[in-house]
Image 1 (cartoon, rainbow, N blue to C red):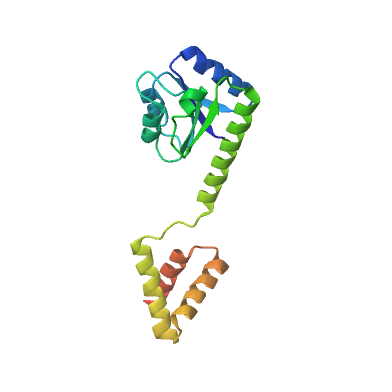
Image 2: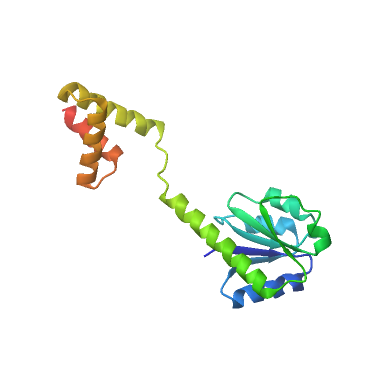
Length: 182
C-alpha cells in the first residue's frame, strides 16, 4: 500500500483531501501544514506520494520536492496561473478547482507506478560484496586447479551445486572451499 502525505497551508483543506482519499481506499499517513512537517513524516517510510499545494506555510512546492527522500513522488494541486510557472518535470500537476475523479485516477496511477517500481526493486539481484566476490573467485580457482576446469566450467559447477542444494552461490563456494582445503 502506498503511503500518502497531504500538505496544505490550511489544515481544513488537508483534512478534506485526507478524508476523500481514505473513503476511496488510499492510505494517508500524515496531514501537514508545513513542508518541514511533511519531510519529517517521510522518516522511516519506504517511498510514497506527497500531495501539496503551490505554497506551504514555510516553503514552496519546489523546495519541498528537493527535500523529499528518494522514493517519494509529488502531486501538486494549484490554480492554472501557478501551474503555468511550474517547470519541474518529475512532478505531476492537477489544476484547481479539483475534479474528484481526476484526483482519484491520477493518484491511483501514481500508486500503481510506485508498487511496480518497488516490486522491480525487490526482484533485482543484489550486488555482491567484495568479500563475497573474492570467495567465489577463490572457489573457482581451486576447482580450476584441482579439476582442470575452465573458469566458465567452474562457475557453472558452482551454479549447479547451488541450485541442487538450495543455497546461494556464496554458501556453495564456502562449502567447496571447506571441502577442498581438508
